[in-house]
Amino acid sequence: MADDEGASPRELVVEACRRDQQHLIEQVLDGMSEKTNEEVAEFFNSVKDALGNYALHICALYGSYDVMDALFDIQYFECDPVTRVDQDTPLHVAVRYANEKDPELGLEMISMMCEAGCDPRVRNKPGQKPIDLVFGDNTELKSVLQKAEYVLNENIQQEQEDGDENAGSASDSE
Image (cartoon, rainbow, N blue to C red; front, side, top):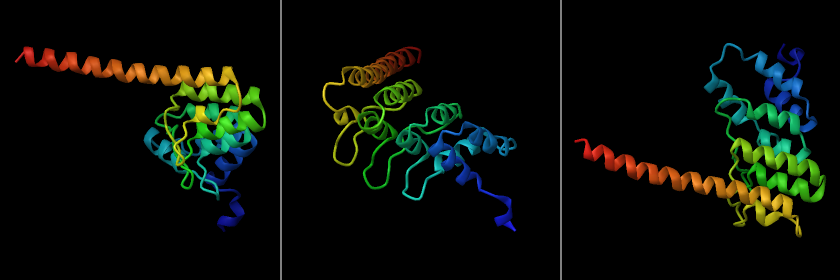
């Protein structure tokens, strides 16, 4: 009987990511209205295609900007999963998309990914960060990745400094 029901939620998400069909993401989300935000995120974070690519990898591979944007709206959504074989993040895949298929759309995806919290400092299995994959002198793409890395490094440094200050003030009050 299950065969008569159509595609599973997982299959719908994979298809949405491949074909940039945001309405399919909305359909899956509508079916999860009774779930908590954590349960919804757990489901979306576990969706993979037959090759082991997570939802964001699939979006980056096919240039599915609108679906990617919808996924980032899911609370607790993991934006830096890595592939099993190459340990690539979605940013690695998006840089390849920008290099090989559509530089403008690739740049837009990468900008959105960095704004959403994807980490450009993560290295894949060969030890490359996404910026290391940028072809030639694509200064605009390199700039987006460098700025995102700088912001993340500054936030970590600021958190460490704030943590030291807080630790000091807490001990002063004892």
